[in-house]
Length: 358
Image 1 (spheres, rainbow, N blue to C red):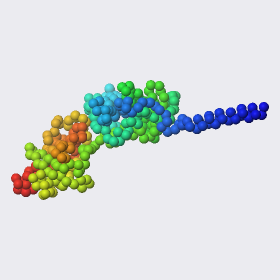
Image 2: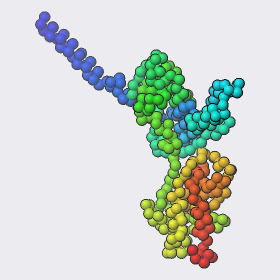
Image 3: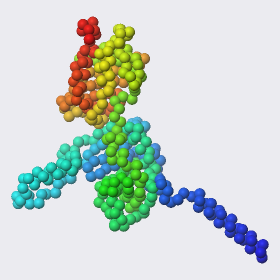
């Protein structure tokens, strides 16, 4: 009897040890990033859309070039303002109407339905490239299940107009995001298909909320100083070629092609200011300035070994100067102060022999 009892106790102990090992190996249910909200690979993700009551942001793959990621920024038509109390019988004062209009203007920049501009499509930067695959599979730090109305109101999900929509393999999965009143520290979301509520990590959504400053590629060129050996500058129907030498962080030295041993300081300084032009505003792909196609003021072509590397075109529009390059998807608006560069471009493209010296 004792031997049989000892054998039974030994077997039970062995089973307990195996069970304890399996439990120890299993990750805890509430481990950060352990809860799967959408289980699909990143290659199946077609689009990520974030929206609130005024605007929307989309990250999407180009249909013709799947490796290219784009950012689409757009406004939603404004909802009509409620009627002013007493306006029907003339009870509203003029001052009250002005105050109401001013309050609506101060509340945001959302345009009316008639004034809603078309969305802008712009290249996504490296931050967007890293953010995009984090939505497929989409993971949360915690699953809260289906909450009652009181809890939904407490976490900011009641009446929220903030949405997150993932399009995966052509199928859309929509979520309601908690309102901003609690800040980004508690980003709750509710899956619209079944009402399940999850708690996301705090670092996933802020980039979408600030997409214009965080996700848009604002570079004029994808090459740097020293990655070209010649420059052709054109203005007013005249062109002049220069030999380029040097590399970043120093300005390149430019010498006329006909006199490669005689650096041109005036052209070097001019080109240095041109290279440091920074866009003030980015227009979307195929978007034209408000006044229509701008008129070219000057153009700079970059070459290496006789082959094109890139180019910059600066043009004048009714509301200032714009530029576009081999990398920008459309025109970019430049800061004020480009007029001197446009005027000096004529001097840069004029040979010394014809101008009597720079």
